[in-house]
Image 1 (spheres, rainbow, N blue to C red):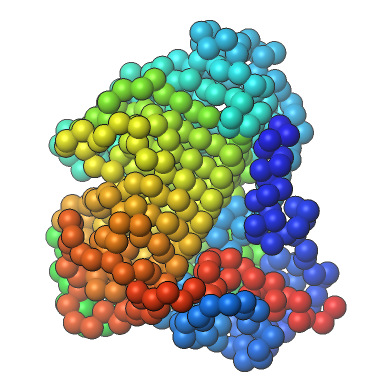
Image 2 (cartoon, rainbow, N blue to C red):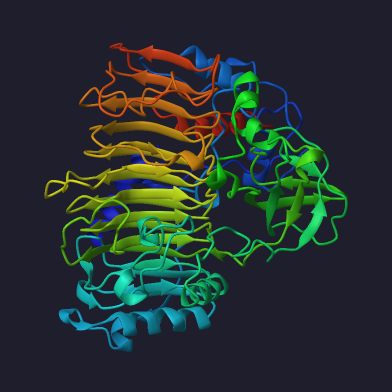
Length: 595
């Protein structure tokens, strides 16, 4: 790591409250049912307990506040963190449940040894891909890209787990991309028909995708078919049932299964929930009640195409037929949804990209949905992967999460001319963490007929977090497809973009969206102040905003059960960052446990 990158990382850790870059963790402890975050702490320290815990009532369980106003919603959340009706529990989002550090894998290849040249002229893509392939054959490791500018005339693909592509720092190592995905692969039609470009929401010039998934993608592309991007393959029949699951409630850490013989601690499985003919699963994702029950779901064909809901999760412990998970259940489990744990396309795990800039040859931003595929870094069917200290410049789309879960994007930046999706999160992506991110003001005005979506989420994606952001353009793009239980916190935004999504994708919001401590520099309310449009959701700590530009009406009739607190006030909201406060709450409770 470069001196600059190391110093940047140390500054970052101090901001997170880990002086010296070391996170303090308690010794192994036995957790009881009386502990509030029993399984959250248990997974962290290697102990597991019997199930959801009672509420915490002692003042010591609440993180110590400094100055500022503590909203009533936070005090409510502390009492019911896993089942609060409006605020989701996201305290374990991200790589390895939000670990402060990424693995430092041994260096196994230097791209120069495979023919890469930092002269800005020689096509180094073949050499870089050969080095990555060698690391994969070795079982993983770090591929270093020393300082300099490396021209790449093809995409860079990481298809094996535990492989890390590491530059010398985003200010020292640059990959200069001369071609787009249309030139390299082709421009194939959308899953939904018409002449839309699939590269508007898929693929990257650095593409992290497991080899098994990539092979099926390539087959579909050659056949000019839409390569479905979910966790279970193109036809959704590439999965095998491991066991069925008994009913359980949202927020539970353990489930009871019919047969545990194929399950073991550490295994990654899919929790698969199908909908019934009355669409009660979709209603549940929207919070339930008269509004969702009266909503017309049948003609929302894009939305219903995202079902079954597939949630990847690691198993923490198996005790008889009781299975404890590394995160609490995102939804209820009911018999009518045919709940089961299944296999999935083999995921990419433990892979990362660090310390580099990916810059494309500068071209005008294309018209909406006709992106040519100057796309940055995309994670597909990836779990526990990461990007750190990465900049993308002059891209159609910046950073993508496509059927990706438990990944962390940290210290990332989108720069240069404007991007259609600076960050996109879709096709059932869950439990991801995007923190310390920046969307710079575009270097050229956006041409007419283009759209700037900002931070995107759609397609039943859930429990994702955007934290500590500086958005100098764009918006909070809930792109229909009813994403739910996502958090945006501690972000400054110049709210200039527009959200997307067509009628067939259904509602903009499901339940438990939370916007916490958001500063809107141009006072535009759209998609940030959501108390009038999002069901069972929360807006806390927002400066005064006015509706103008794109104005939405709620998808569901009647009482939305939304909350607005500390709006248009000079009070500082505490906790300032909801995600960090949830993690601190976990640590505070762990400190109280008997050693």
